Amino acid sequence: MYKKIVSLASLLAAAVMPLCAQDFSKFNFDIGGGPSTPLNPTAQYVGLSGNFVSGAGYNIDKHNSIIGEFMWAGMPPSLSILHPVNAPTGHVNLYTLTANYRYKLDNLGGSHFGIYAIAGGGWYYRYASVDKSYVVPPNTVCQPIYTWWGYGCDPSGFVYSATVAYRGLSSGGVNGGVGFSIRLSDSGWKFYVESRYHYAFTNPVASTLIPVTFGLRFN
Image (cartoon, rainbow, N blue to C red):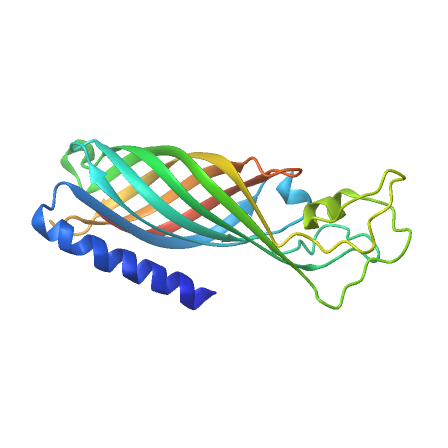
């Protein structure tokens, strides 16, 4: 999966940079990664993980930009949360494609330091992979953690033992956050640190997290 993400970012960079060469002031590009912190209700089931972000867009003027972004965030089972006996285990990954608006101030007081605010929304896809060796025991009482993994419950309140947990769930979502940048020399490249809140309307459990991203931006 990591190789696929890197390949996607490389293709995105290859497509954007020739455009940037034509007019440095109109196009932007970003790539970065860092830790991700889940929030409730997601934090009831997963722990800290990492994120990868890459995007490209168009600068309307020196302050306003529109940016399309791809993000991956891991959602590993939390070891700090009491795990019900015989509950499923596995891996969950969140993938997003979003359109975002950014307002930036690149030169605070004539310095190389800048700040910006960014917000947007788009498509959020949560992919769950349950341990293949796991089988739901007969007459297992439904608990929220089974809903998180995608198992169904019958009218009597027990987990469908024959149900296979979902592999993917799509939904809309929104995000918003702020960032801090440092211009590298007199080029259009900047090092940035960003914190953004993401909320995806995945049913029946919403996906909520705050990724903190460190990376490079062009323009």
